[in-house]
Length: 189
Image (tube, rainbow, N blue to C red; front, side):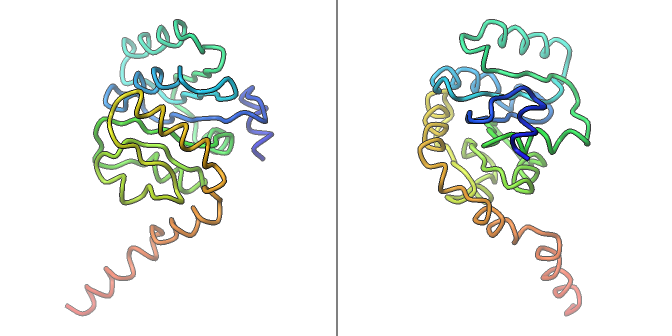
């Protein structure tokens, strides 16, 4: 359950938990998220879970967390997350935050949709094909202020992101839904 997952991670049951998950690289905009996080309320927690691309970048992230004015509300797990633990992070989260500067594809996006977790993301790459009104908040712009606004929009409108709405929207991305038209096309050739 969400309560059990939050207890396992040491997070409050009644807080809003934002998740940044996966391999941590500069283009994914974690520094922008740290800046945006300053403008969230005291009932918002940030979980950063994933391995940095290098030891040097990992040290920089650790320093940013240590120096952050809201560090008491940031949980950083800077390591490869075992497959057995992935569900714990996603079930504990209210939203996945993807402040990516650019993107070609994202397995993390599909993990969020699989776990029926809304997404807050900058409008880059093809994310607008997956993040809609019922699956998350697509943020126009690229600044920390823009991202903070997207987070606040999510918090005000949380009731809009119901599990059934996310499940319904993401049904069309299932393998059988994607491959059936392709197989039919091959059969007609």
